[in-house]
Length: 137
Image (cartoon, rainbow, N blue to C red; front, side):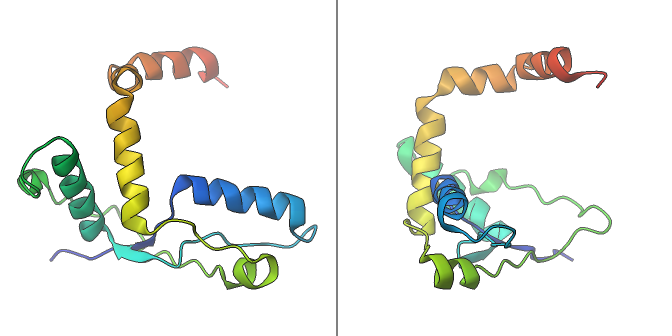
């Protein structure tokens, strides 16, 4: 049986903008949840990502959907993470600036435009650096 895990998704720059707003305008010692008012099933997210990558690489949209592999959930894995951002919205006027699909497109474009960065991360050099800098602490 495939479980349909649900998460609230938010573009990284919107998240950073919310943190900045809370830092400068939020009440000291108050808690503000940052979410996108945008819950998606994980399987639907990966389909949007694959379709976006296919389109941006000039492939037929959906061509690589066959790459999806279902894995067993780890024990205790939450099926849903819910974020209630209404306090942030009401008190500080914050809202996401992008629709989800726009954020995914910008994110995918960034990765495609930064292949050298990707190569460094996926080569294992990043982990060597991480172990060198932080290992044994």
